[in-house]
Image 1 (spheres, rainbow, N blue to C red):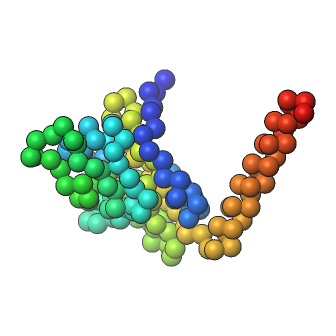
Image 2 (cartoon, rainbow, N blue to C red):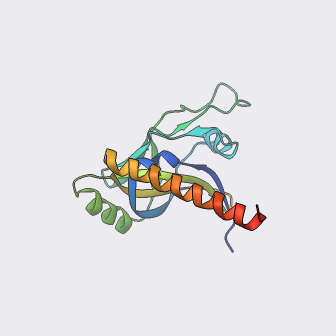
Amino acid sequence: MENRKIIAENRKARFDYFIEDKIECGIVLEGTEVKSVKNGNLSFPDAFAEIINDEVIVRGLHISEYSYSSVFNHNPDRPKKLLLHKDEIKRLKRKIEVKGYTLIPTEIYLKNGLVKITLGVCKGKKQFDKRNTIKERDINRELQKQFRKGLDGK
C-alpha cells in the first residue's frame, strides 16, 4: 500500500482545462524547498510545464522561502526540472505537439516521503464549456441537498 498525502491541488486547472491524460513525475528540489513544500507553502494556479532539450521544466510554481532558514534560502520562482523516463517525455512531446494541448501540474503530493507532481495533458476550455461546468456543479449540489433532505426525513 502506498503512503500518499496530497499537499496541494490545482482546482483552477480542472475549471480551465479538459484533462485528457495524467502522469506522475518526480521533481528536483533544493533542501529548503522540500521543507517549504511539506509545510504547504506553495502555489501554482498559473503553472505550466514545457519540454526543452528533452527535459520537462515547470514554470510558475511558487514555493515560498522557508522561514527557519538562514541566508542560503532558495529562489521561490525558479524553474524546476521534472523527473521522467525518456520514453515518457517522448510520448508527452507527441501529445503536446497537437494544437491546443499543454502540460499543467494538477496536484502535488508526498508519496513515501518523496515530493511528486501529477502532470496533466490538458486542452483549454472555451467560455461556454466553463459555463457548462458551473451549471453541472450547481445541479449536482442541488441534487445532494435534496438527497440529504430525503435521508433526514424532512
